Length: 246
Image 1 (tube, helix red, strand yellow):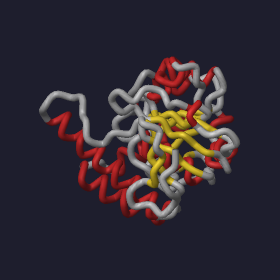
Image 2 (cartoon, rainbow, N blue to C red):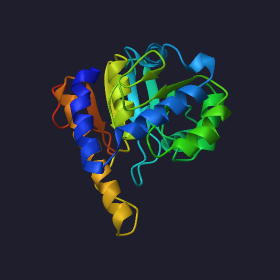
Image 3 (cartoon, helix red, strand yellow):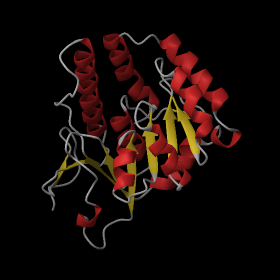
């Protein structure tokens, strides 16, 4: 999805959640300064090289999902790539899966993401108005391939292919990279772990927007599918691609 199409939806999200854009600008500026020279150029192109024309499994951290059962994918299928959304990187590593790409705003188990990076994973670090301290602490510690993203217009240094939370942002990245198909594993927009209160309510609203973002991506023509724990692969609601398969 091109940025001009995504931006109006992001403005709706920002208005609903009271996300001042000036804080996003400050975070983006900080991330640019923290990225090593090799991480500040051709961000979208470098991510595309990992995912283009592949069947991309985007791994979320839904309760009880665990790692994706990659062995279930049929023989002779398209080349496979794995994109882990933040904390799902640790789940993948524990199962012996090194993600091709990790999309993170650094609020999960970052040492696992650094370990994945050291083993070849490409890391896309997202800057937003609330993670400045995490950016300063963790970005210099990544030893491998790295790029940055933010919530403003994309440029050569920071990408913005759309998406709001780590999970849907990972799916947007796969779509922008030209993935042949995008399978969502471990996505759950209904269950929230936090106890009742303001934090729980805000997370529920964020997950609601993540659901909307993915519906918009599917409606835009992205080959988005849901991979369920019983092995079914179904077109994502709102999408136009494909029939159910096993």
